[in-house]
Amino acid sequence: MMKQQQAQQNRHCDEFAAAEYLGLKVTTLRDWRIRKRGPVYAKFGKAVRYPISELEKYAEAARFRMAA
Image (tube, rainbow, N blue to C red):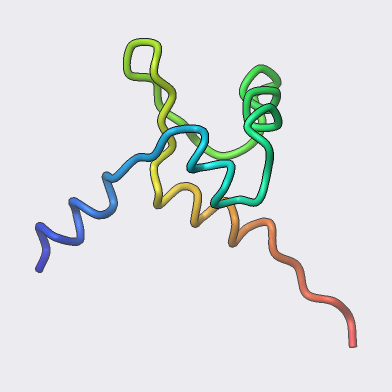
């Protein structure tokens, strides 16, 4: 079970899947990378990849609670 959890934590997706996951345009993610904003990403050569676990953390951190 531990190996499966580690493998899932290390999964990455491309910028198109990341944008879809966050409900954003790919151009927004590209702009954020230039401005050093947005979710954590990795570069493998020229390929930009977003760890799934980091997208989940980013989405959770962006949530806010409305006052009742």
